[in-house]
Image (cartoon, rainbow, N blue to C red; front, side):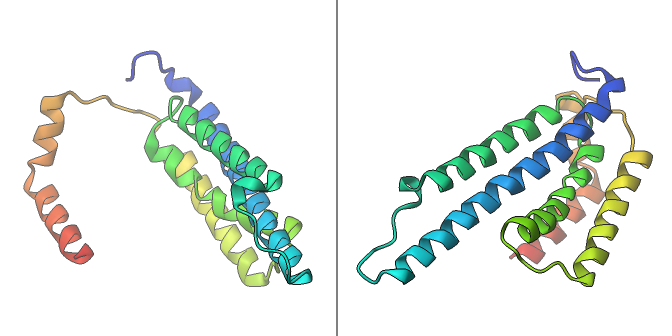
Length: 163
């Protein structure tokens, strides 16, 4: 167990990952809104040129919101194991679909609803049935795990597929 981590606080990590996913997508959608607004501004007046994103206050706000979401996500991993928290990050796709529909007026189809439901079900199953333990391995234990033949085969196959 990690020093200073209370295994009973994994739910705080889950809540922070969900919050982070929502805040991250609010920031990303604010930035996209800024890009769309800038494109409309330039299209409306041919004498104008597009401004750099850093010269648009709305885009900068979106960036700051996006960065804060990543800080929240970083903090979340101090409360629970990655095996539980990483799958909950899939909520990011759900929040993006909902926020894009509300903010940018993008369509939300039945297919989106089905995908959203599937993601939420999968994340819920991972949280409910995932191990809440987070063992801390020594360097020797890690080296031992990385030298197992099963891992070596996996790494070679993965590298081959990537190439």
